[in-house]
Image 1 (tube, rainbow, N blue to C red):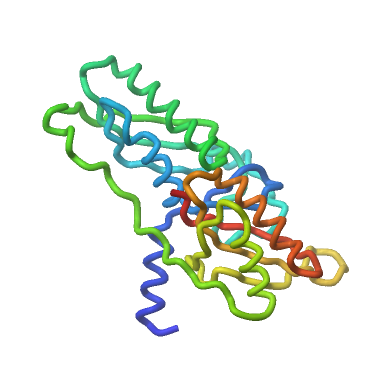
Image 2 (tube, rainbow, N blue to C red; image 1 turned 60 degrees about the vertical axis):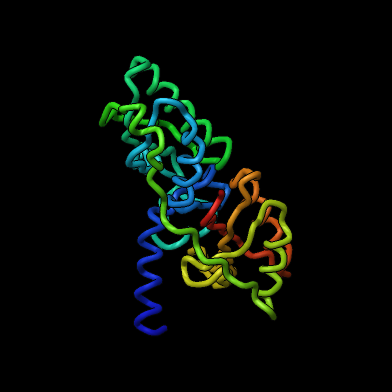
Length: 240
């Protein structure tokens, strides 16, 4: 990898934020914080009298995390309840507690129904009052750039994995945020047994599908596509 390509890869990985657990420990799926933020921002963008500011998603309680059933992507957060924190500006035409309640419900619903995130808390902070006339046309803050699509492998087992993943309804394409769209490796489970193979797949999910359900289906399809039935982890890098 050239210096320019390495620099670009680091910048893109920093821009995607944390790797958040999707679903439960048994689901073996993660999503980039940037992709999750894009969905949440889209879900609340039409709420009247609200303008969302800084939005972050993190583990709610480090003492309540769990070991995933498959190896996690590098630097991924362990499965466990999440906390969404957000700053927002609100119009004075409605009591602030009522505005905050609407925003909290919209964020929690989008996280669960559109993505499959297990959100335990939504913490909000009012940072400004809106001048509704001046702020009506001001655009919402944008998330980072969408990840570049990656071409499917053309031969061998990576090709079979790519074809299996792309055939799953709801998969918009493969991506390569962590370097390769499909990565096959061997892992030792700490016993005397022979190493077992593990596959990590990066995907973009269509907006009309729930990210967790698509990731589950990809895990199943990829495992069945290879004769030794390896363990599979899925990383969702776009979902809108």
